[in-house]
Image 1 (cartoon, rainbow, N blue to C red):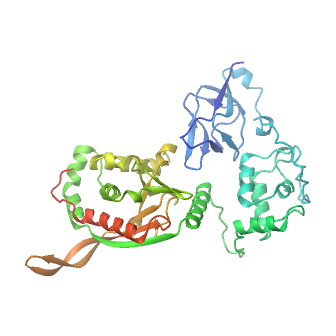
Image 2: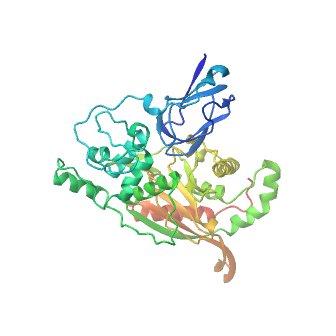
Image 3: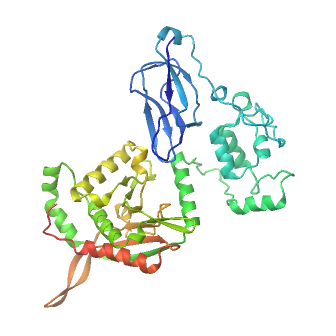
Length: 435
């Protein structure tokens, strides 16, 4: 019987692992070349992986919610349909992986659940996902060993560890062998959340994977960077009038709708060139000054979550190139077609809160960047217009720009001057320019 190994492919420079979120084909199913086989999720995006060959799926080497490393064999196909018919059971991941090295801690007593098994850690298998959750939540090895497993051969599943965390008291169980100092340090690193008790009429909704990642990233950003926000109001009447004048011609010639976003990105790029210390990252006590200008644009997904695709080398693109890049990335995001490299390498981010009718916002920095710009709604407002013949009141299109920055490396002068420069470029937009 000819067998073909399907491996987890490389999905970006910094992506080393992925979580199996859903098998699109089951054992015994026929799989065509390039047909979607499995859905995986990295810490960046969700992807469907196409099959690299045609055949019958005879083995699934990773179960749902388990983590595979790039290069791991995740499935086996058979090119002999008759041979595959006799093997219809997926192979549990535990049979493909070596058990971890023995540990000396003893399991705690917590084995009173029905239909569950508690096993000593000596030869107990823990999936990378379970170990990752345990590490993030500060579980000791003894406490992890004490969790009753409902998986194959008493294996602790994701549901088991999440149920254990939900039932935990505000202070994690600390084995007697652990010193008081160590326990105090663990508690200080991650304060226990305030318990919330749901009433009988409340609906309990489990966060999806992306929402959990967003939540962790936002909390981390606020804890790492002292945020300061500066606000500037910009008169964008020239931009509004110019876009209204050229949008039909632009579409007929380029086949693309021109929105305000690429115009704003163009102004941001010019301001970054004027103030390059906005385009940096912090590594301990050193500042990394970025040569490339890669602008991320926060994009709302149909699920309500946000993702930030990145326009690479935005300073090398003209307005037409920026428009095509913005539209392509936005469409890919909405249709869940973004590749891992599409959301990597950003050096500065913009977010358009005006899309939702908001006048301004105080955005949270997208780490490891040091600044982010929120674009407010464009509104018609009465304004004083200065002319050589005198001042008068007129109707102008105006918007607020909200610039949040990391006060460790960006002082108020730099943060304020930068957003003012963006506004200047928007206000000085040439209404007679060609696209």
